[in-house]
Structure formats: structure tokens, C-alpha cells
Image 1 (cartoon, rainbow, N blue to C red):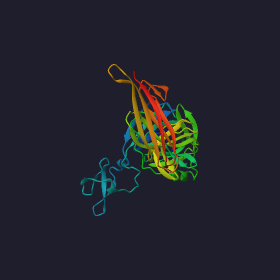
Image 2: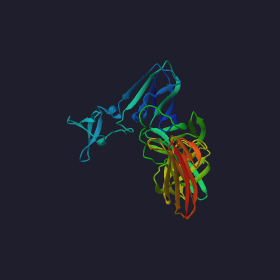
Image 3: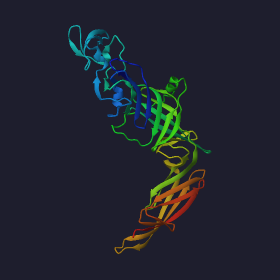
Image 4: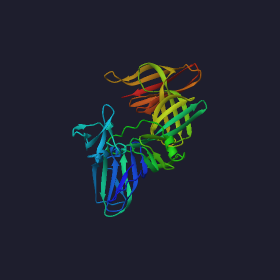
Length: 425
């Protein structure tokens, strides 16, 4: 993941243990470092630097007097002036001298120069991952030796929840998975992980594209001896939802690690056919939509939701951040079996001096028709514009909503009406 070079000694180790604080669009990486002298040099591969948010590299617990960043040459630069092998059109390989790694300029035995392709080159030693990519170094000048924490923000690691609502004739269950994405060629050995959900904005450009999604829970479990970590709720932090993984795990390069997340209990669940619209004096007709309404006994971070009825997918939507016990309501599209006819009768009660209506009474009548062999609950909400509005004789103030709630019998019809008085005087 990172190679730490301390003082004059070159100490290159394997991936170091790190703490990750993962947010929906970025991650804070925190890694312990130790300086044995007055210089600490951190080397980041180009893959890590590409996702790093500028201006976020910091050294916590170690005071420093200056920090210098520079780009180092790639691995091929170490072979300049040395012999490599170039594959010809006939498949044979001839020894050539690598003159310049930047553009792969080589010189053959006859002293002629040409530019090669990397895939046509062969080497006496195994090349590292991404041999053409340079690395970035950040050298801190310190007053003395000590230990601290290197931290930075990266767009390359993110997480998101995704929900499944399984509904049946007897009720519904809601469950969630957490997808932790690593969009780099670097593997992270994660010592401690916290997940945060909520609205957190940082500067530094758009998120990186996510890697091709696949579930790598088996990879994480294998690294832990089939003891994948669990996600525990830590409560609220200044409006953010906070969670923690129960054990260390490995986040492979270019991967999506998926772990079981929430299994909240639903304290309320309803299906209904609905229509949300704005009042108009024109007649209309159409179909109602398939609506769901639920409440959960836990906070729900925002994420995509897949709905299954009797084991089959009936739609997908996205829910926003939802507090414990707050109502979640969404539509999954039209229900062609539940139709409505809407008729409006208009009576102008008062006009102004120019003859324009200022106080008007409307009688709105809905006729609902259910083509199913079971009863259906229907709900209609019409938002009404006007300075003063009354609905069915009750003053409702400015811009209220008229509502109808009705049960439609199987293969039956139901008619309901409401009366609006709109006063714009």
C-alpha cells in the first residue's frame, strides 16, 4: 500500500496496517509511521496519488518544519543503460540497450535507435505492478525522531449501503448490505474501519469512477479464516450516522467487498395505489401508481432499494437519509389495474371589477376502478394553490393539499368527492 522510507535508511516493507474512516465519496487513511532521524520520506505509488485529494496529506503527532513533494521515476528508469530484450516480428528476441525509459527508446547491437512498445520488451527480473507508473514522494523535515500518524483523504475508497425489501402477503422484511469499494491497484490491510453516512462535502474534484462491481466477501473471509467482520452501530456524530467493523480485514485492489449491514425491524408497512398531483379545473383520467410506505426502528443511511414481492423483483428506487421511526414513502411505477376518472364542476362565486373570478368553488369527483381480484387501498393528494383555501368547508390556509383515502373492493368501483373554495381576493 505505501512504502515508508525513514531517515537515511531505506526500509521498504509490505503493506502496513492502516485505519480507514470511509465516507460515501471519500476515505480518510490513517497509517502509523516512525522516524528514526530528522527526515521521514513517504512514497506513494501513482495509483494512490491519483485518488488523493490535494492538500490533505498531514502528519499527526510529529511536528515538522517543512515538507517537499516530488515525482520519482518509474521502475523502467532503473534499467536505463542496461540490457533488455526486444521481440521481433518473427517472435525471436534480441538483446538491446534501454536508452530512455520515458519513451522506451532502445539501441540494438548495430547501434541503431528505435522506439519500442512495452509489451514487446522482456526483462531478466520480474517487473513490479504498473512498471510504467511513476511514484510520488513526500519528504518531511523533523526536529527529531518520533512516532506519529500519516493521514490523507482519497476519492479511491468509498462505501454505500443497498437495501432489499422482501414483501409477502404476511408482511415485509428490510435488510441491507454495505459495499466497500477500492478503485485503485493497491490492497489495504485494514486494522480498524469506521463507516460514516450523511452529507459530508470535501473539496478536491469529483469522485473517481467505481471499479467493476463484484462481491468479494469470500476474499475478505478467506483473509480472516472465514471470520468476516460484522458492522456495528456506533450512533450519531453531529448529524452523521457512524458504524464500525468488528475486526480487521483485507480490502483487495480494484474490488468491492460486500458485508451484511442492517436488519432493521419495520414498525409500519403499507402498500397502496396512489396519485400525487396538483389541482387543475380540467377533467382527467389515468392510472394510479404502486406506492409503498414503511417505518424502521433504526436510522437508515441513503442508498438504493430493491423491492421483491413473493421473491420476484417488482422495482427499484433510492431512499434518502432517514431518521429512526421516520416515514419512507416511494412509488415503483404505474398500476394499470387501478384506474381513475376525475371530473371537476366549477362555480364562480365572486368576480372583481374587471370580471375576473376571485372566489371559486370546485367540486372534484374521483371514480376509482379496481381490476384486481383483491381489494386495493387508494390515496389521492392534490396540492391546491391560492391565498385562502377551504376543503370540504374547513379553512386550510395557503397552498394546502386535498386528500382522498378509499378502499376499492375487488373488481369494483368507488366514487368520492371533495369541495374546494379558492379565494384569491
